[in-house]
Amino acid sequence: MEEAYVRLLCPECKKEWQTTPGELPGSQRMFHCPNCHASRRMSEFTRTEHDLQTLKQLG
Picture 1: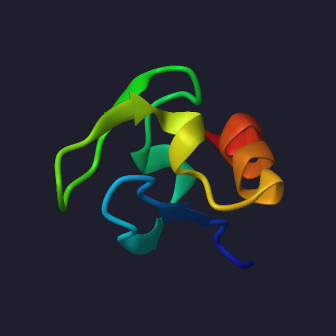
Picture 2: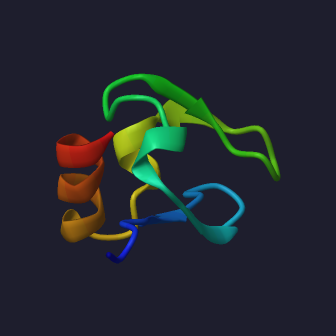
């Protein structure tokens, strides 16, 4: 079985990474970039609509 992941992109510093949805807060909760510490809603860090839907379904 494949493990789902969400691709993330910081809108401030442009750091890219991926992680499993279970390790992330809900899409409307605040999230802090591990690189530059920018604070925004988790949904603003998802790279694509598909990543956002994966987060909403499995997060």
